[in-house]
Length: 495
Image 1: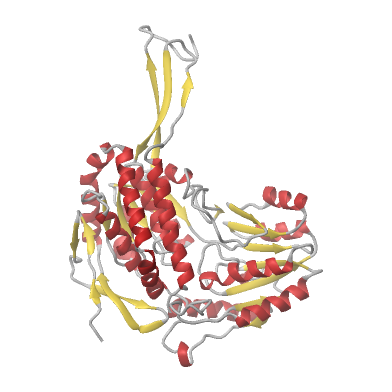
Image 2: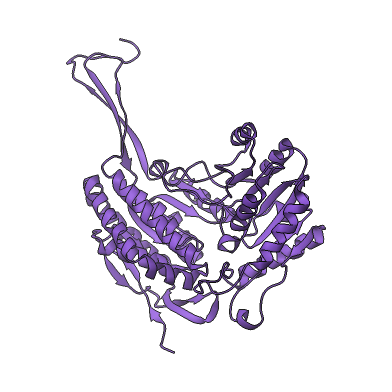
């Protein structure tokens, strides 16, 4: 076999090795003998160099007219369109999810790029009448400075794009630390933005572990905003790192999302949603539908059909167009999933299907786990409370809509929720009463679009949102401006 390709960091417009000279392997989770490449095992020295480069480029980039910044983002988005299939195949190889999903991942980056490129000619503020004569009042956005971006492995191009396109169009410079499990997709993304014409130092890429790169980045005093997507535990560390000197941070963390199936629901549609919501991306989404609450009148039928269909899903290498679910990201995640299956069994939940790692034959070289369903779950069980991040769904029976909404809201997270019903009045009550950042009616808990705010409540986040115009708020400050052309002293609220 040919030697794995060696990749480098991107700092101040140059592709460079880590200062320590060390590398780590990027491995295909469907076939661990397939080493995709060697990436720099960087440390604080490299992170500091990248921050210095971004700080050095900031003033000129800040003063570049926003429409000109937008033109670069537009060109990058066009290049993403041209290379979509190649990028998707490389993403499937390093992350594992099926080609249909990795094409969607790249498409999200394309959509976000075109949207934020358009913001270069908007970035709207407000103009408003003054309460005083011969006085003009308006507001504008200001960039913050260097943005530290720390991203996960499950959406290795979409999530960096949500953050980086918004940061750049606002006039910030960026240092990106991607997940060590999926650095290639971020490398490809940065390369395309470089080819599109970003000035040197505006966007920098440093690969390596969270401890050696992420921690120095989040603690660096010149990093004025940290945007992080990942676990609640690490998000708390980011918040604590930024708090002492009041630097901004945006946190997008876990979820324990629910689909509610009412007795009047279209069961065929609800089953489609539960399968896609629970087992799309092998359940490795913050928006995955890891809980399904089903009305007792349709519980037995739904459960039987759900189990039958889940067992028929084809698991395998995502590059195979007939495969419907890929592997876990690595063996450690597969072990975590299996540990939760054992917890659920010990808690008394009824294992309906799955429940054992796939390790024989075609699965021997990968990190595979089958679609797994627990029935008759109590909503207080750990498997119905804690984020598993794998293909495990807990099915919970209920009697009333009020009980279902109470179950839905009865977790520490608040990202996404869904209800299947034909009752319009109930649908509107659910929209009002479900305490999540995303609510779906007659659709699963996944499927957010880039022009609306994305994020959650409670332990899912810290109040900020990504995507749409809300995403601009993470990477900008408001400045209110008052222009008095009266030629006299005018005192607001007094004169």
